[in-house]
Length: 420
Image 1 (spheres, rainbow, N blue to C red):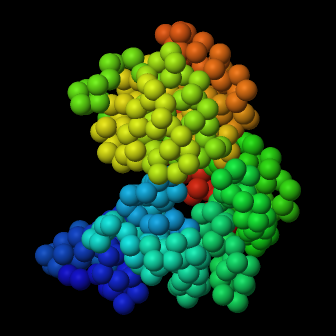
Image 2 (cartoon, one colour; image 1 turned 180 degrees about the vertical axis):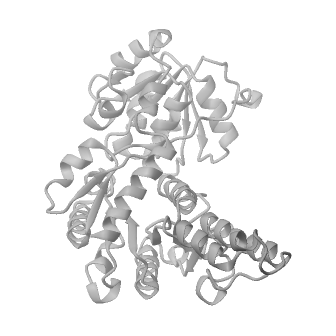
């Protein structure tokens, strides 16, 4: 028996399947109808297995459905890129299980061409970034936002503001769908940008924030910062999974378990990779994971005792490096909750972090801290004391950085926006 268009192909396309609650409802109705067909009319059991009974069951289950959610601002799912995409991956799967039907804007350059998940569909949009550079992001976001307006979901969640702000400000373009904006981590403060770009990024943040019905901040410091805008703000962090059992170190790396410091980061000034490597390499081998085809990376290539592995996305390799490093260096100084820091905590790393409010807000007293000016002495001390540093970060992660908790918080915030 075919389902009567609960998620019809004309509306949801080839990549859509029934959401779990809808599938349960339909199967219940089919079981009732099939069982009723085998009973004689007038029997005592027949009234229990009628279409009326099935309709009541459907009504109960559908009362738990949330609505339709569109997510823009990432490169799409499944995650093959980074933090925003990992967030979207978990939200799509977690929220669809709670009854949301979800559209996810996905780049036409996404390496995965075949993908499906019940209750979720990818909306593929042309992405000219490979040919046009950063300007292509603006076109991709324009197409994503315009399509969202045409789909008319119950709520629209967009991640970041850099290339979406000009279009979010145009009400005739984005429509009247309630809008939640996940703020960038103070992108305009990052030292890699020229002053003119920083001014644009600050304008984009303000424009997107003022266009929103709800702001989402991923760190207490970001929540305090967002208070400058006259909009309600939901504080929801990123989440992290416990790592799988890590394998042994690759022998070709020439590293000893516990005998090296690890940095996993983009090589940009605000991440203090060069500062930390210069400070620590005289006393310990330093392994740096991150693309190094830039001025900061080229400066690292001449340092003794520094091992550059380039950009790495092999989860097994990264898990083994985290599991066997003697000290994890987290030099990020801008942005909110950093997914890489959460992964290091989940891997039970001893951590030395740049001393700023973002890192202290997560790590508290469970890390050693260093400053730009005092990095040499502070990191050398952290290395010698690495055996005494906290490695068990589970209590901190359990307080608010687990994906089921994050999904429930988004569910509550988005339901509230639907009703507003």
